[in-house]
Amino acid sequence: MTDETAQQRRYKSFEDTHQMLIEQAVGLIADRGIDALSLSALARAAGVNRTTIYYHFTDRDALVAAVKLWSSQQIVAAFRPELPRQARIDYVTRFVLDNPAIMSLWIEDFIAPGDIRASYPHWDALVSGIGTSLAVAFPDEPIDAEVYCVMLLTSALIGPRVFRHRVAPDLDTEATIARFRQEQQRVLRRDGIADD
Image 1 (cartoon, one colour):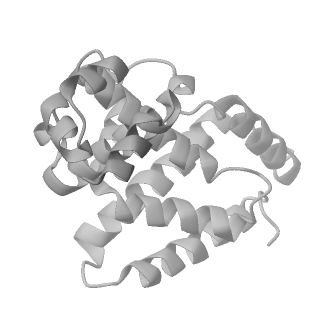
Image 2: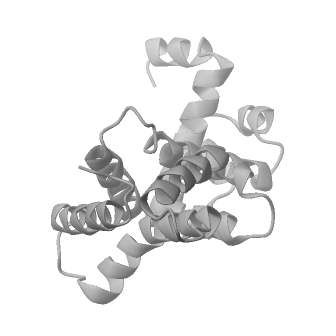
Image 3: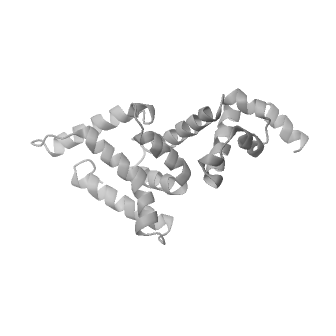
């Protein structure tokens, strides 16, 4: 490590260092799996001492929780309404395919007991928006927007991995993304949620 690198590291803000540590942890999980993640392994990978790690994470559970929060933020970023629907579908599908170990953590958290808003803070807005769209499209049918939203999220977050591993393991990522985009848009159009 050069003197300049050491000096830059020394003057990083808490937030910058915290983010760098989470990204390093994500890399460790991607390379070696969740079982290989430890505070010591993170310190080695990040090139910092263990005291720095403990300053940011009290224990391994806190580190794993931070990685889960990071993954949730990545998923939530894809559902920003200002993004075109195609970009949202592509982003989520690519993230799911490119981050299998992180998605396994997120899915484990997603199906665990507790309030979904802890993993997906925009849940209420999603249910409200979908409920409104479905009520307009199907005015004579009772619609359970919460169940519909669970089905949407489950297919978006688990479907691409099942497809890649069990249905079309030889298909490249871009072709998989294109196929998921086509079918998700078709379903949303069919259900009156999208007109594009």
